[in-house]
Amino acid sequence: MKVFISADIEGITGVATIRQLTVPGEYNRFRKLMTAEVNAAIRGAFNGGATEVVVADGHGNMSNILIEDLDPRARLVSGNNRVMCQLEGLDESFDAIAFVGHHGREGESHAVISHTLAGICVKEIKINGAVVGETEMNARVAGHFGVPAVFISGDDLYVQEVMETLPNVKSVVTKYAKDRLAAELLSPAVVQSEIEEQMAAALQEIEAARPCGHEGPVTFEIEFKGPQQAHMTTTLPTVEALSPTRIRFTCKDMVSAYKHMWGCVIIAMAATNGVLGDANA
Ligand SMILES: [Zn+2]
Image (cartoon, rainbow, N blue to C red; front, side, top):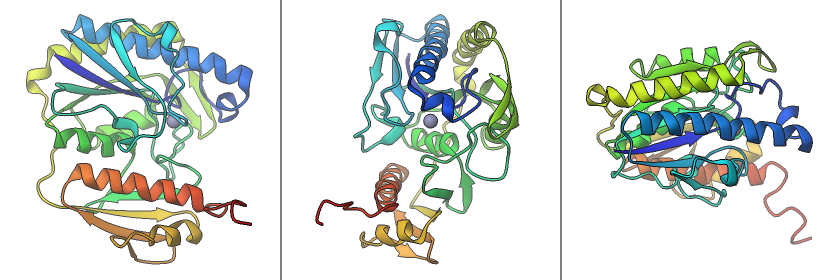
């Protein structure tokens, strides 16, 4: 059984503020804790019957997990020049996908460091009319490959949010959100043993899991924070502007739509302060 783990950092226990992920000394602590939570999921996966585990590091520069500390049975996708964003390496050969250390979507909840892919530019993403966060979006892409989502971990509000769309996943609450930038944290030791246990349980019940599939074309709507971000995505002929900050495009399937979305987000991030910077000054 092959298992894919999409790992992020905002949802691990310990993290309560953005500063913890940006100040070098602090960031190093949380890279270690992130690696430890991912290791717990890897142990659980093998205990639950996995024979192969691939982990995709999905935060920021996508090279946070410390390979030297990672369970040697797993392989790690690292580095952020990826056409498949947080899912690079996923294909139909996998049997399950798990989300470790993920976070709530951009919006009005107090989920810890809530955002959707890029807090600097994305205000909302809709797929075929439904507002999604990263986990719900990634679960749909995995569904295209016939791979069911079986496990999630993150703060209590994130878990609540995702369970609305994926009610059958096993989940572990790592902390209780008190504000977007404050949380009541559980001990890493407690969280790691729960992750190990629930991940194993999720795979032992894999027969009942169903992929989150889509038939036919997929339409994305993206609301950006700045009009310059939305405007520059209209360089792509597939993109239609619905308002100065909202765009729409349609692709033949979920995987091409996901790549298209990521391309638009990359353009929007670059456009925040001028796509060419001072390069042609
Ligand atoms: Zn992240």
